[in-house]
Amino acid sequence: MYFGYGANREPRMMQAITKNPNLVGHSILIKGLRLCVQKLDQVPDTIPPTSPAPKSARQILKDAGWPETFESYIVKPDKDGEVFGMLWELTPLERELVREWELVDYGWYKDMRLKIDVGKDGVFEVDENGRFPVQTEGLREDQKVDREVNGPHESWIQPPEDFERVAEICTRDYLERTGQKLEGTSSSGTESRS
Image 1 (cartoon, rainbow, N blue to C red):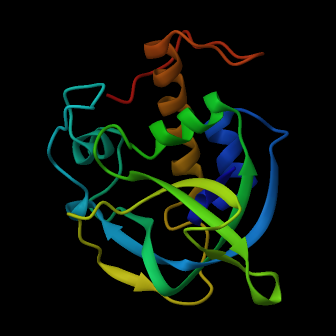
Image 2 (image 1 turned 90 degrees about the vertical axis):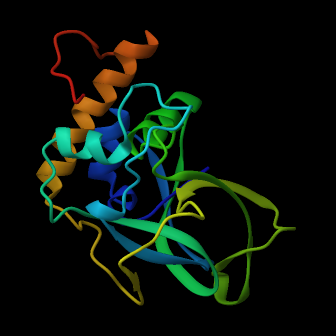
């Protein structure tokens, strides 16, 4: 189970990343997380040892054509926070495609493994003893954010068409690099994001 927030709560976005038009998702509100916004200059500009390419996350974003005004949602633990999103049922490959999109191995987001449980009013709460394991990605401890988001928010912090364009390139690059294929898709003849 994967918790998608921001644009990743939208079926349109998740289909662009995974190429699966039949994803199953469930609306969910999770308490114990805080939604934040990062600006491009707050995205790491170092190359971690886990990086599949000799580029920083910030450089990859710039090379993909994102403007200097680029912003992105990111979550962090916060006992008083709550974030609305979708709980997606993903295959292991679909989860890896989302990790690639979020530049986890490139040092931007970090993997988060949450345990959630149903709290009062059917709202899910992060609970270390929770019954439902959920994966997502969020803020690394050494990163800063521009601002916190409280209450309802738009899914798209950048134009959806730009997200979809970059997701197409990201997914194709990942499939080419790893030699994997999605059923019914081809990973050849694509432009590169790096």
